[in-house]
Length: 539
Image (cartoon, rainbow, N blue to C red; front, side, top):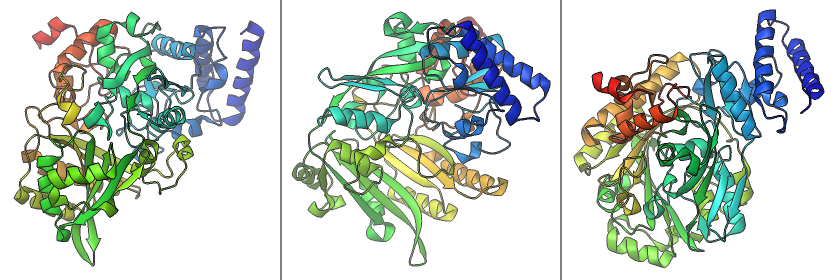
């Protein structure tokens, strides 16, 4: 871009800022001009101009850009800290410029792909910060013949699934069931879905990546080295750099799969079936994934708990019925419960779309509605007794709102070492629990009431879940576990929450962080600390 064009674009943006927000002070204008000029000076002249991709508070589009990928209304209020500016890159040089300018001006960098960080850490900070929002970087290039795809971090899982299905009816990718989740955060936090028992986690099927590091270098697997490549596959990529794209390995699926969704209340014997599920779900044929969603409900003016069993089987209904009759007869699965379909149709089924819905809906990046929410997680390594389950139901009915989701492990998950990636929760786990509370009412009273609800059921579950440490899943971000003191991070402080997410892998993540980002530029409330090993030992 020549100097004349740069000057014209800069003048145009300055005029827009002045006209749209007369309340801004001259000092703010000068600061924004300084930031913008830094971005222009740090960009590759041969790349598209960065000026139209930088949004400052005075820009009419600033609020809509910021809020369009906020998936938790708790962090969409007038009091939520806002970024000094947002960059929406279309080229890797724009990411590099954002990093360099944030370093020059002492700003923190938040990296957002889909906005599903449950505690808002991808777009909120208490320190002065900027957001690099990757939604423009969302290409998906599928090589069905080679069994791979290059996927940019701003793509959603729905866009990935759609692109794969457009090229092949017998390929898939093991990732989450929510189609609006961004690829960047999902993969860097490990990523799982209903193919995990057969094909493992998302990161078990990542073979390369492109990252921009704290020095602005653009690295692939070969140039970043195996330590950093290990770390970004489940250790939280935002601690190590901005991950631009991923090369994923596609997995084979049959042309026809089978799904079912069966609901049982306590009065219909849900307790016995849930109890038996614990002895079956992680040991049954690895082609079969049966999730349980537990909800407190009111039926005929009586409080009860509903257990919703949702399943994907990689095969025909007849085979599924045979497996269930042999391994889980207590469930009572019937032919009428089973629906045969293609894998891409099963993606829609799991997203609660009615049968016959076009896969085009997977290209919709924004959910129909947003809610206030809080999530937590646990791992279960010993079956919970019937008496204890009944106590859990009583607690859920007392609290009225929290939902629990049980996701079975076993299969391939038990065959991969806990140190293969930063994600350590492999063999020995029967299932993972997600605790969830959502609400629509605004205000502190409703916020505190619902936070108390989910914390209460979490505390009630303490005797029944993994210990030493009590473990959690990184992608179910939970700042209740602890946070870093920004600017004063320490190994001992971070290890409180870090060992819950990563267990023994936390130490290796600290070593990698210290090696690849010694200045601790990529930092946030739950980032891996950059702590030299000798000082850790001294703490």
